[in-house]
Length: 474
Image (cartoon, rainbow, N blue to C red; front, top):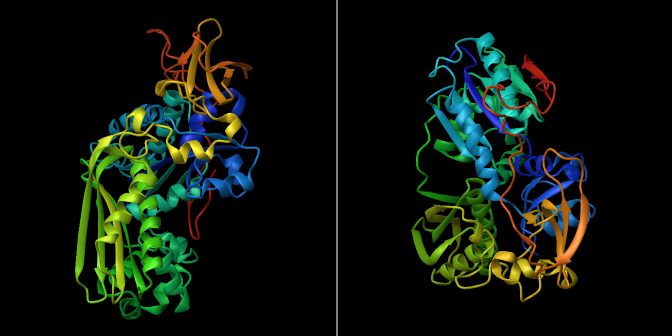
């Protein structure tokens, strides 16, 4: 591990929700939830105002509505988010050739490789400048973590949220990690966390106290050795420059073999949903659904199905995974299950919420989520299905966004990123003066000669330096 905090981790704050608030003045400072609006939809991102009510990413949308009934619920605009992500990634690549994106809103940067930092002072200065540049170019905020390893940089950025900077000084890592939950470490999910808890291990200090041999006995050789090293703040993983993603997958290994066929099916459905969340987080869709099953005797079976077109729809992936499971004999028990998607493609606006091939973009699941009085009229063409949060333009009233639709009507709020909160008007869904529109930039582009983009505020947010048990920024 290096001796200077020159690995940077950037995480944009509540990215999708923040982008929607920046785009819609009437939603600033209010609870905003972005995700699939169907009965089986999940929350992609919740604004910090929504999190106060307990809403969080990956939560079922129905539960989010119960917790925050007055929040604004919007369908994602992935083309818009990707455009902002491209701006942010360009700023990161200006710092170093070694940029490792994890999703649209998160990445590692090796500052040393680009000569952008070589010690604590230069690293901190680079982090401050990056946050300032992100705000100036996109109008949004991001949190920055700086440390001597990827693991610690990610922990630091989490502590910095929202809109902060935390730098972990070399030599303070062990003291900072000690009291933290074992779930803080990479690779410790719910199953491993519960396994450690049953052994009386809940903090990172307790991992160290238990010793490497005990970790190996509890978790196996590879996982035990790796987890013990990370508990000692040892992480030698390099920042790897962006590579083309070939597939997206998730899998779980179970402490006790699963024998109940119904539970196996439910686990596959849960994994399919997790896989889609990861797929969407990377801004991708895919054609081939893959199911992996490791049985009680360690024999591993893989089954796949290729669809007619790429999808990122959880219902489609769940259904395909269920069909694949039907062809697998799970008699005797299952010790591992996995669901993956390959044959990847970038998102297209038309297939964000597509169901099975050939169905209307607002298919059964999405349509069923919308109360009858707010569903688009059946006569509305696919390209004019007015989705909450999406952009429209009226011939005389200008740019706005859809608040809702139904009974042959669509309600629009007319405002732009740099306007005051706008007025609301209702139209027939087939009004010839109303049409879908492209999103407007969050930061107005100044004519050449006027300098850089306008700052959205007077400066960047707070910054902290993690020493001892750590410091929380933001």
